[in-house]
Image 1 (cartoon, helix red, strand yellow):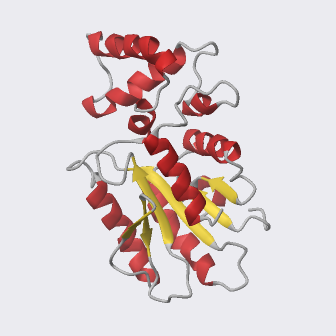
Image 2: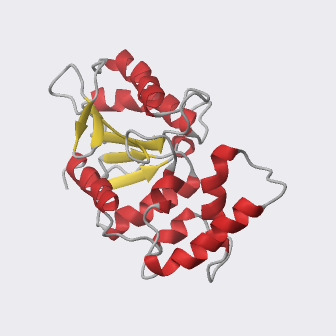
Image 3: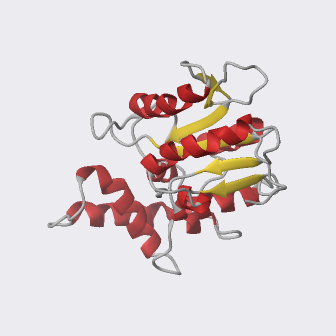
Length: 229
């Protein structure tokens, strides 16, 4: 990790990492925020996933207690997924996070601040843990649901066609809960550079998302406020 970057944003995997690197760069947050996934830290047993992000807190939170550590603030962005399935949904996801943070002196309650979530430490001198659970810190879903609501009007016809194509498949190999992921992947496969990941939706100069959408601005505002930009 770069010593001169005191703020760390942990996301689920490599595609999410590139997406948020592009987002932070677009808003000049990349100077002060290092976007990482669990495997970047090379902890024993580390793996990229929602569970991997939560488990990485065992290794990362002690850095905030170390006066000599370069890390000052940590935030995580992960999917809510589906309530009732594998401890999914906002309530179960935040509960899993607090199972980890409680071992390091963080409070049992969480606060909604700037449309995001913070888990405060019992020591007022310690920074809170920042949390954003996709899509909106309350509903079931994933980052793909967040993206779907912000697709540019100029992309609507193509995206709707992608949705109809996914719907009309007679032999779906993915689960019902993965339909939005399939829709987004199909839509991106039909761009001028087929097969790109979600990061392509924020390619500089060729953005496919409405950056003026209210919930897009909410996420940016939360990131800036949490990292004191």
